[in-house]
Length: 272
Image 1 (cartoon, rainbow, N blue to C red):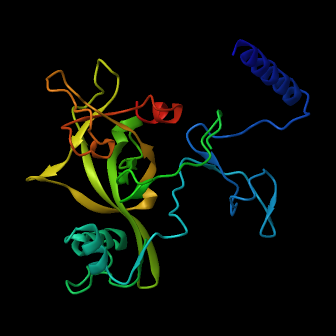
Image 2: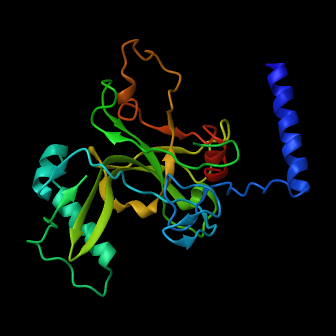
Image 3: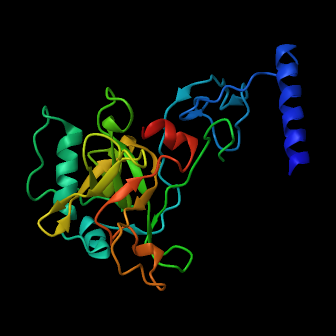
């Protein structure tokens, strides 16, 4: 291991020397996001490469969330999706989402309109290039996987003050009056206190509840910054977690969670 570390140090020093002599181009990855040439595809990621007949230009992007191109399932209407998700309020949630997207200048949707059109469902050491956010009822035959993500609420506030954590319950898209709306059904967490926990340095969140159920809304995927990692707040009371406890239930069985800013350096820069 020491020999490997020595060789890596020598390679890094050599690269710095080559960059200083103009023999190599400097790496220009943004710390908190990706550097994406406009109209760039996954198969053409070299800087300066021609894409679709135009010269690619560097653009620093904090986050760019795109839905998977191949849907796992396709439903003809909202009712079918609501039944599949066991979420009868989905038509109302989508109606509220559309009202927010269309803005106050548009008339609110009629009660009989629920958007029943068509629904569908490497990180390098110097910067994040791409990550996958999972939201599926069956993950590798080990139960459901519904990832958590950072949601941007106020860009003017620093760190986690302007963010929130939500848990994805479904990723879907629909078309309304010729416009496609990629969105997500999410469960909300709310902050505990106004500062991070003094012992761990991590923010604490707990499920946002209305009566006995978690609050669920529909949000546009453009408001998603990146994935988030939550750690249960175990406490000091017995009994301990049973040996046969399923990890897929960890986001359902605890009263509070730490927002883990130590999972990687991007989260550390975001959730301070």
